[in-house]
Image (tube, rainbow, N blue to C red; front, side, top):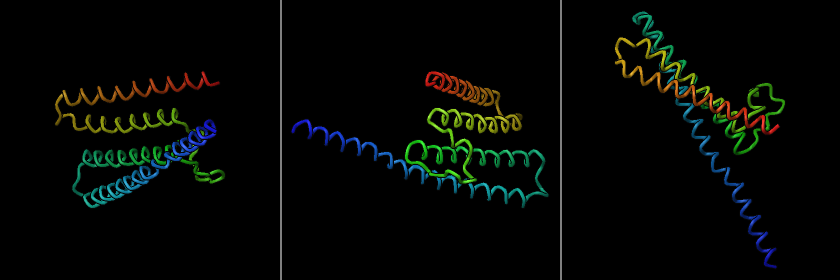
Length: 173
């Protein structure tokens, strides 16, 4: 009788632990709201650019456009985290046969998501670095140096994650 009681407690515990994944669902909903804020921000910045077309310089246009690209890349990052994270850690999305299903979602796992996210971060960092180089005359060399160091840290981290992920894939096969 004692063993049967322990088994039922273990089964209940397993169900509770497995069900706890649903605690992440509100986090993904929060990220969807954050993405809506980025869409609003994008619209505001684009409206300002269009309204000021006759008075802005080419450098100002370039900086605003880089800011818009930055917003798009962050929105892409959010989308990867929302869709990939939900599919990986909470529940299947059951998109089979949907023509709009992203191709990358077919082979998403925690390892590939880390690599994809790190690549997105490198893209975002690259945009910031480009903005820094455009504004170089107004910035200190120390500020520029630290931004390059941070960017290179992202690049090296992504390379290490990709290498580690590759080793794990090889070991699994």
